[in-house]
Length: 325
Image (tube, rainbow, N blue to C red; front, side, top):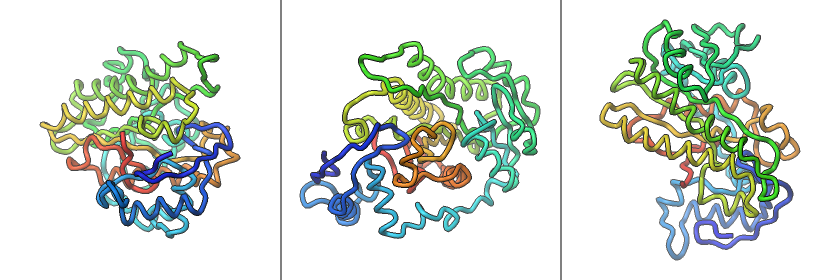
């Protein structure tokens, strides 16, 4: 494969997904990637580009971070300052479990006013102390995501909307095992769902010009240029298509909202140890998976940095660098 113009070998040791890419990370490969990022290639990759983008090979990315003692990647508390989130009204979709629950927990802890938007609550969410729990919100239902959701919100405008709710069909999809209804479901939930919620809150007057922010939790699986590295044999069509569609939607939304100075962030939350990624637990450690509590801080750190200069750009919450489209 090619990494910023440098050749490297690739060994697949298991199934590849957007959450985890079980690949080799030889010292030579890690060294070559590090050299590119710090010095550029001898031919065509400028230093600015090498420093701007993170790398596709996730085991190599994590190994490089360890070798360099990258505090941003290995110790988020060394850079994370949540003080600007205190007092903000933050809406979180899918707040009843996984990374959504972890985000809500951290937000409550730092003094934010959390509006949890869910299909149904959970005992953990009920006990959290959020200011509002909006239930019955199905991301695939136009009416429920519209007036039905907005009618339940009583506390006023939203400062930050975190579109976190998603869906991942677990069986491997190849040409011999395609599941078109499941693919449509992923596209509907992961790409159209956040658009429905964002549109409804906008129409309902909950987004404020010059101050509100919208955050899309998507995935590195939406990077088309990374598929040759992370999915060298293809597969998992619906998942990756839904994330690429979500990224496109978010860029278009950022363009439409620029005149109102409402920033739109597009974030890969990193590899988190959640129920959704449990089937990859045998590679959690070699790929740098973190507990949801750490993953939540990574995401919130990027949200504190979100402004109009960053709107419509795709960031990796693991290292804070951009992901190429």
